[in-house]
Length: 346
Length: 259
Image (cartoon, rainbow over all chains, first blue to last red; front, side, top):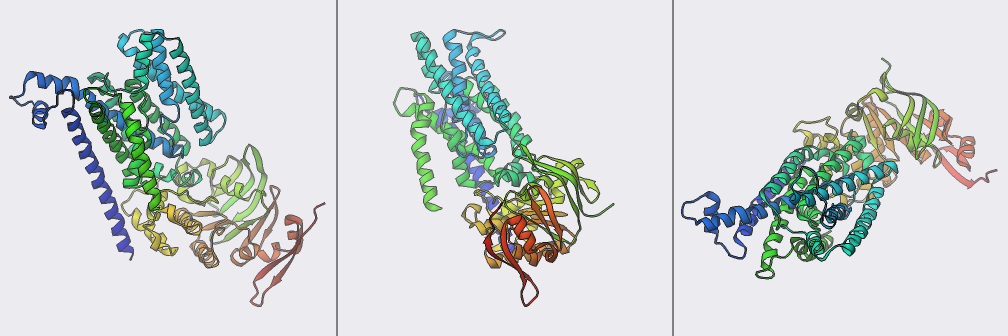
């Protein structure tokens, strides 16, 4: 009996590991599909040839794949991974299934930062003007998270306080954003609207490299805290009594989340749904053992975002929709369907 | 080195005020089960939280000659098992995973045999058939048994139980308490909050009664559970009688009017 149960447990874990592997493959396939779609459709052989540096590929195709599509496609994967990872850690450490950068006002603060740069024409010293929008958005997002943590601590507060502050922040940033839109020129307004809808169009190798670096620096620490995060799912008192320093766990997790969310949002604008749905879909697939949940969330986020990037090019032929619109419009119904199905089973 | 748990002039804060102050208790010895009793708000749960270092404390708390305040958190977690009053939240984790997490999260246990160790505890508590079930699908009583498994899986020297039987049916109450007695008989120290005084009298070696943040009485059940104590501390008129087999029973007749 005991052996049978243990064998079943180990079997279940192996199946989850395989599932994570399958998701990684699916994300890579989505990347290839993303590279094949665009104003000029490219067959897989051409894309593959360009990627592997085959001789018989025209110079034009090579430029399209390497310089035009690949940075955007890679950025889609990275943004999805970063937002879903941020969502997964937030949901666990704040003990709230609705927590994610978007719902906590981090995205709105980033948008406000971007808007200040766009409307007021701010440029930062030592930086090329192209970067000032992103850097300003990053600073605002980071500031928002710092403010959230500070307020939460001042109030001696539990996680509910943090969530409520997040909601308040969302509204406040939204109000200031509207104010800026109201006073901005038509030109700036158009840029602003584009930014708040979330778009991968401005992605380039430099921004992708920065986001990749942030992911590489934060993910190992998150994975190392897997057991602590799993224990925290049982409740704070429980986790503390197992010897988990919950305060430190929360502080470091929120720092990781801040870096991931602020970097991602500052580069592509507001993208909702992925940070919320990525972890939820992953949870339905592999459960809440964070050794599997965290990688699964990262991959689900990357996969969803990559597919959204493909759809953004296909929905209206010849028009590139803002990817943030696609994730919200197409993602939400899928998300609800998943929730309802999950409820029905329980 | 003196074995056991010593509380001397201890203070525990909760919700921004000192719930317990200047609190001392005769040393708790290995092998003994001590029950903390007292009315709601007397400070029982706060005391347990203080010992487990989940609430800020002052004064002396010494376990086997070592001050708990000087102990690093992971080491403390290895020595103290705490079963909180709150049941583990409804997570999408199997029972086995929950118990493994309780073993591994504090960094006390790294080995690949964590699953075996967790499974052994489930077998001992008679809930091994639930091992692969999701926590979120269990009843309150089943989750309470899981909570005990989580508190005991690290083989703690000191076991703190906050109302461990509150969600259990009669058979499971007996199973849990006899398991607690077995754990104590291995030379461990057990301190449990129980509301049911008859249950406490049946299973405890000693009972400590808390009243308004102070120790009201402390000693063997027969000395502590008396009509006078019940009147003064709980405000009820009650009879304490021995059944034919010698066990104490408490019969509550009515609530007294407080002056």
